[in-house]
Image 1 (cartoon, rainbow, N blue to C red):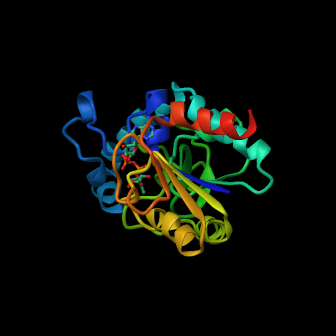
Image 2 (cartoon, protein in one colour):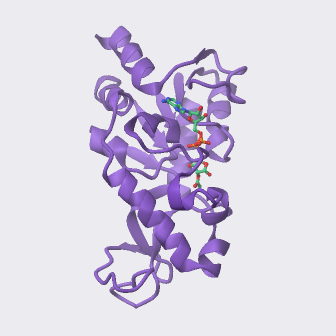
Image 3 (cartoon, rainbow, N blue to C red):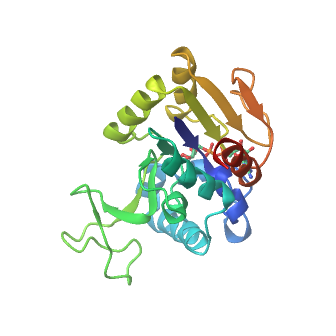
Length: 227
Ligand code: OAD
């Protein structure tokens, strides 16, 4: 069994979805124009501050019943893979132990020169410098136009091709390659179940399209299977 999640699963934790309108100070910016290597090269301070704001949001959030239901599935299903496009770390907080993070994690920082994750120790500068080499750090996330981590993508794709049941939860299914995973599963004969309150491009292809909130639908599914 494979579950693919997107930012919709964290909506009930109070973390706005990727394409939701931004609020306050950031309302005038389009996330798709901040989450790029070009934006970071042009204005590293602006991009760092945007991520610092989002990091604060996720650090103040707690996992919800949807995250918890997926952690429960990991404990109940002998072969279970959780693949997420989310960068918020809420699956791990809910108790999921093996999470393939296709788009990185906002709680980590990375030195773009040494290509290693590091902990910033000097916050007087924005972005803070790498403690090893002094280069400006970046958030450890994948930006538009960047390659996904090869090992994670290969693991996710293999799991999608081999699974019997594929759950797609809280994702608009617009951003490839993650959006291709349910189709790989379908082509290989898996049953595909989508959980989303709104229609998505996957809905007409899925075997079951469950229109509802992840925090309500997932616990009911898990309860029906294992309760
Ligand atoms: P989107 O913002 O595109 O889609 C969120 C989806 O969640 C929508 O289809 C909503 O209908 C759905 N949704 C909202 N509330 C929900 C709830 N309570 N339960 C279930 N579903 C709900 O976010 P993603 O699909 O995650 O990538 O976006 C994918 C990627 O696009 C992101 O990871 C980001 C962006 O490009 C990068 O930054 C590389």
